[in-house]
Image (spheres, rainbow, N blue to C red):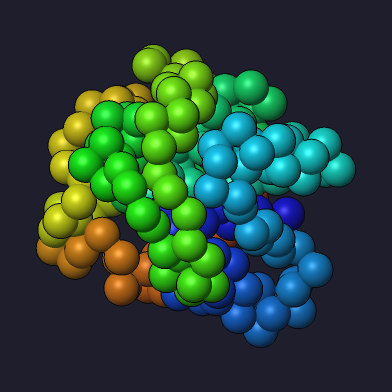
Length: 197
């Protein structure tokens, strides 16, 4: 089972989510994919994700978390032990999103809300300062990410499997080129991957 966790102000209709869903469908595995629509409140988003996780044994789940979704995936992996693919993950969104406090609009749904200090406090409560389950992670990061410094993620997840993609951007428009690596990781958790592309 692959569960895609979308990022800040995103949705199940995101580009990477659609690419994963379509690739699995082409393989006749569409029933192995899930991408819940997350509430903007971190505590509510985590409660929803934990309900999803309770339905499937952890060793049968691979999370694919993008940006803020990677932050959520880290918390879930440390708590439950499933594998996670972290795509340009946010490390400290409780700090990084401070610059965005105020009115927000979901990029896909058009839903509007206010990003507040309470959101940041809830995010801080989910922060994992030192991830311990390094064999359970695959980091995919682009060096051209305009929002998040790839070197911070490389250091934060030091010791995990890492694929660092030269150039690109935060949206990772070439993600489809790396889906096979995601599938390989999800099915062969014992295989190390450490590459610079």
